[in-house]
Image (cartoon, rainbow, N blue to C red; front, top):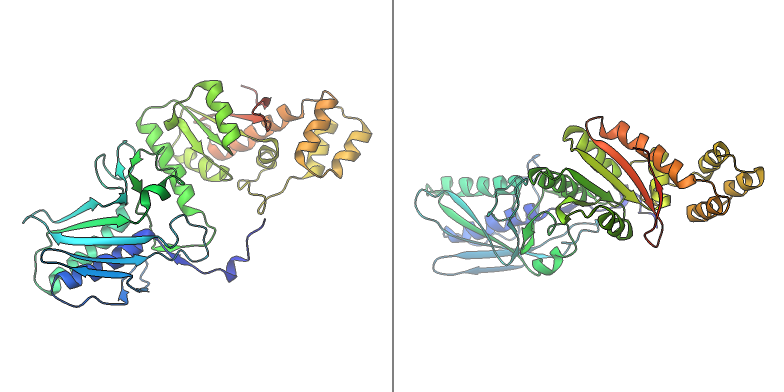
Length: 361
């Protein structure tokens, strides 16, 4: 299934942008004003979006506001999630303090941009919320000692569909965003999670990481090497996202594990392995089989094949090590992108999780 033309898709707002808007609304009321609805904020690049409030509440020592996140046309796990911010006065001299409400996780492993023990609210959203506090406090000549509690309705449940568990973020979701804007189908949050996964593994001094295209290959490579969860990267289709990052942040060893079709695309030079953005070139596969000494009849069949798995089966029947050749050429591609500082190997598994191809050491 291919995605719609990106020009026709709606942009959305990050969790961090929604939390900032809710903070501004709640703090305005906390300081004695009315809840602004809609509430306008300034994003890091200067855009000024307005957000409608979903709920508002004020007590003697707190104010709370919530916003329903609109991720536009991006398939974001937090689309339509309720982002709730409650503000209270902090102790004099404490400055701005962040708390994790229900559904927001706590950092438990080193390697993330937030220290262990802190709420999983990333640096840019934190700065955006601090800026709101400074703006409103300065306008009323008030101290900036404010506690900001961020909660996400059903965040713990939604976090099961993210990589937070592997990153050591316990208890819920992260509050993310660098620009405040969600670009449809950019998959920026997934790629960012892969980068954070590498950071966490490096901080844990894991010498060997495995990046897998799917659950079958991940299970197989885990059993093969006995790797801990912190060493596993749910790469999916984003080979480029992993390889470009390790070029700048090398690790001792990376195993790329996947099925035959996706690894074939990597061998062909594709960095995005999604079916809608790259395709298996059957002429390329027929050329590889020709190098292996395949018959003219098989070479002709491959040029008009329906699936990569069909080609692999034909090669198996002819006792031709096609999967091994593809794994080796994928390793060459990966090493060119990932750099010389990381040892890279490529493994190909079939649908039953059996190893069918391996690059050379």
